[in-house]
Amino acid sequence: MVDIWLPIGAAIVIATWSFLVRDSPIFRWAERTYIAVAVGHVFVVGLYTMRDRYYPITAGTNYLPIIPAILGYLYLFVLWRRSRWIASYPIAITMGVGLATQVRGTIDADFLGQTLGLIKEGGKIVGAPLETAVTSVLTIVITLCSLTYFVFTVKPKGVYGGLYKLGQYFLLAALGAMAGNLLMGKMSITIATLLRLIFGIQGLG
Image 1 (tube, one colour):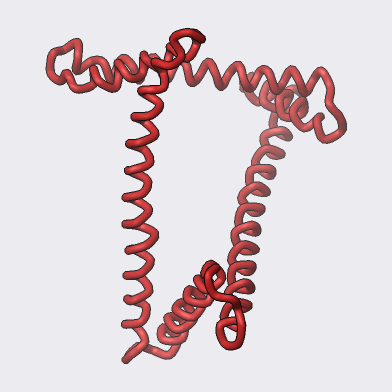
Image 2 (tube, rainbow, N blue to C red; image 1 turned 60 degrees about the vertical axis):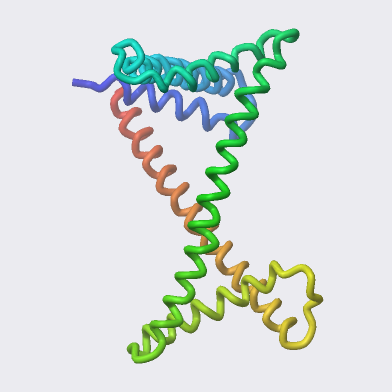
């Protein structure tokens, strides 16, 4: 039995990749179809989310979700020009809470977590095997040299200038590794899409 979604997927992939040649009505059809499906999916998921979130209210077990529900409905006032100022309240509350949560998480994970991790790496040097000790030393050196690149109050001269230059090289190496990893991920998606395209064309036959 032929899976009808394979040829449909193959047709959409070909229509989307036609943009590599030039813009065409086929690509615009695929673009608008994708956007329409995405909006429909988000709408349906939103309905189910509202049902699940409002159930404690209607069941009388928890009335706290009324507050975010009211804030969510206040967002709709952005559609009317004269009442648009009402939507600024939920936007301000959401941004304030989100910023506070993000700052707290950033300090805990990025600053304190990285500092404690660096201290732990220093504790692994003494009495550790040669491979572990060298790895810990390299981790500490690379981290400190990379941090010197972001010290903008001191002009890079002398020893600090050498550390500054090393920090640049280490950061470039890290960015190169990240770009390569991202490229490998995109290539795996492309290969999977090509396989799906091949099977879709076979399904058409």
